Image (cartoon, rainbow, N blue to C red; front, side, top):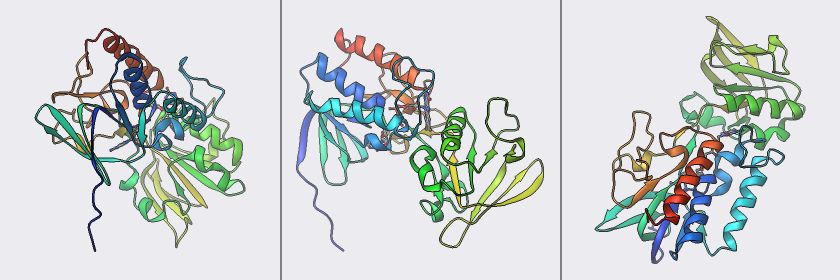
Length: 303
Ligand SMILES: Cc1cc2nc3c(=O)[nH]c(=O)nc-3n(C[C@H](O)[C@H](O)[C@H](O)COP(=O)(O)OP(=O)(O)OC[C@H]3O[C@@H](n4cnc5c(N)ncnc54)[C@H](O)[C@@H]3O)c2cc1C
């Protein structure tokens, strides 16, 4: 074993961590209204929008394009603006006097400011069998993988409004779908799914299979059930992606980064925006935050 040497230490003005809609647009705003050099770190294709079908309830993005296309176009625009990008994940941040160090696997960045925009992600590893069979019949993105299951029997496990959007998207491609719904109640009137294929109050979901998914077992309405299926889409509610910052920053009991009205966190020169914070988690909420952020940068109140 040998240690991979780190690349050069990059000195810059601002590092934006996370390339979802919050991070990409924050980088654009800073570039547009300041002279600062900006590095945008992270992969847009790992963002929530990339995993969504058509975005609803937002006037800020087109509802005619799938999420992957939207985020691709937003990210492409950064290139013409002189924003520097790397798809590397940040593994740690550390204050260094007035500056802040961001570490990635191959390169470290030292900057005057950090903007955390690491969003939220599903925490599915708690479901027995999930990690073992991920990409072998288990998927965390119905929109991305639906086409692989066209003539198969599949189930979707979910517990929030966006799981239902994924279900609708899935049903356009795969006719044989069961819904395993964690909540006790669900208005099924708008769902194009026969009631016999819906299980409510699903608990203790377990995934079984030898190399590929063969069966799921779970409890629903106090009865044990099992389904022989070829694929399981797990679309549980995303939670703030803040693990690497929790030792340094104040977070809520749900792990959401606490910010004030100026997007400041509890540490100097570190800001946070989007789903990683305790604000509402939706595209409309992110765009509202971006409007305030833009006004603060434009008026030189922050950065
Ligand atoms: C399936 C689905 C459907 C949805 N549908 C809708 C909808 O119809 N309408 C609506 O309003 N909202 C919808 N949402 C919610 C909406 O997508 C989010 O609220 C919004 O996209 C959040 O944007 P964000 O940039 O804050 O976070 P994210 O999209 O989560 O982006 C964060 C980015 O940071 C990256 N990152 C994380 N950690 C690191 C690290 N350490 N280093 C570098 N990068 C990192 C991630 O990989 C990701 O690319 C949906 C969400 C999902 C999952």
